[in-house]
Length: 322
Ligand code: AMP
Figure 1 (cartoon, rainbow, N blue to C red):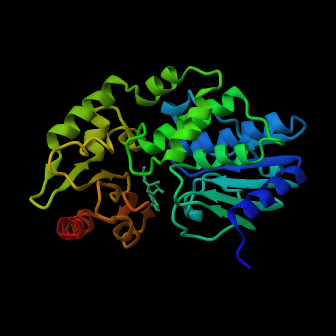
Figure 2: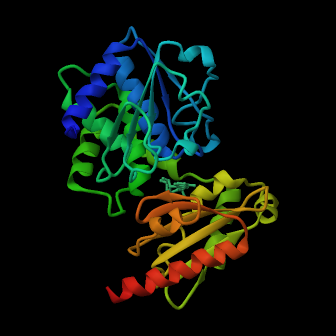
């Protein structure tokens, strides 16, 4: 029997009520929606059920410390604990090795379903972000749940992050209504926005480099390769490339693009984006996945990067003709 979304949400609320200890995970290399949905849900649970203990698993990210800083967590924390994983389609991308050591496991996600995990899987691919889903969860059970200012701040940051400040096509009227409701809480949204898009001088230099060196093919495929050597010359690491993933987007003629970041083992993390051509099918063929217009993959070497770019050219041409 297929359950309705409302029934899934009711089941999740029941599980939350049932367990006193709750541990929330999200994906590795966290972005604002990963942390916003994880800790936003935690704040919602803590404000609604103050007697419960909520812990957060995963490695923090320096640039997102203003959202949350993480405490270490041990396997003993998982005894009699409910585990919830937000914003993570694949098991391999769950941050925190003990995610399967709890008494029960729930998945809450807005990515197309890759791996199935958990006794309840609430997936809404039409949601801009999992932060939007968590806010909807609160509103659906408003009689029983309380959201505090900190939860609202985190959820707002998650929505802003995943919609690129409400510019991507995942921004719906519902996204705007939910964001408006979050704005009515007491937090300074200008500070959230400023911190989300603040960059250290080295990242500003990377921005300039990205604009200058992104190559655009006649079919409208942009690409940039960032070597370890170059990143290190700026004092930067892989995680900082997050700040430039969207940078090639506004260059005239660009339809889809990839930023290929060399890893210490010589492979390439492929950060893939599109204005229209569907790219997650290509990402899946290269050890990755994600959303139709925002995906990630892994390439063994530069030859595989070229293969991805060839496929990008094909979908860019097909999209032209569509
Ligand atoms: P990123 O470039 O890391 O911001 O990733 C964009 C989207 O692609 C994310 O929302 C992830 O869901 C997805 N993604 C990134 N890397 C992978 C991967 N290796 N496997 C599956 N999905 C990925």
